[in-house]
Amino acid sequence: MKSKSARLVRRNHARYHQGRDDLNIVPMIDMMVILVFFLIFTAVFSKTNVLQLNLPSSQSTPIDLPKDLQLEVIVRPAELVINDRNSGPLKVLPNVASGYDLNALSEFMRIVKSKFPQKTEATVLLGPDIAYDVLVQVMDTVRVYELPTAPFSKAELFPDISVGDAPI
Image (cartoon, rainbow, N blue to C red; front, side, top):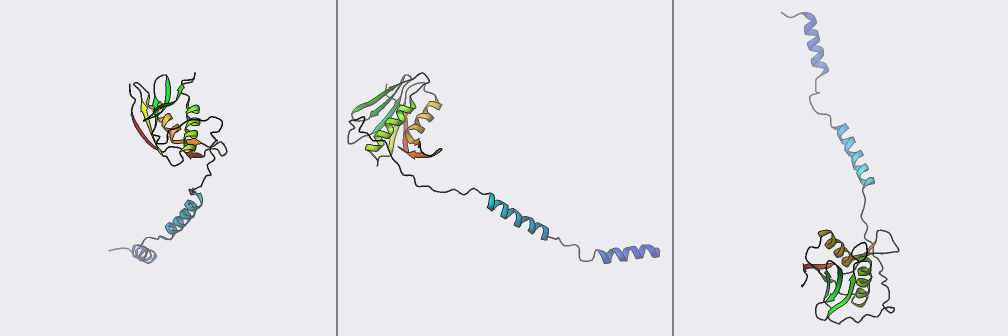
């Protein structure tokens, strides 16, 4: 037989815990509301900017470009050759002390873009034993250029790039 105090403890325990078997989700909902507000206020919203493109005038350096230009950039170990597939070389950029002259390439690409604003295609042709890093740098230079007026802003030159092997 059980003692009177044991029955009293069991009865008080049953009365105290009656209906407390369910899960209290109110604190969890409170935390979710706080997290939602935190995520909304700390989110970075991307903003589409329309950049006005002011290309340098080509009056200072007249370049005779063919009307049906098929632009190629040939990367050789000692130079960069900007070429028209149909008519031949347009400009040869020998290497500088630090490597390939990507600044001169960018300037020439801007001049070409000013004469052919609708053109988006270019081909990068690699000579033998050209490093992958050089390919990426040349592709980036042909594809876009950094605007001097706004930091970290880029303007599009020739975004549709094909890659191949340079003729020997």
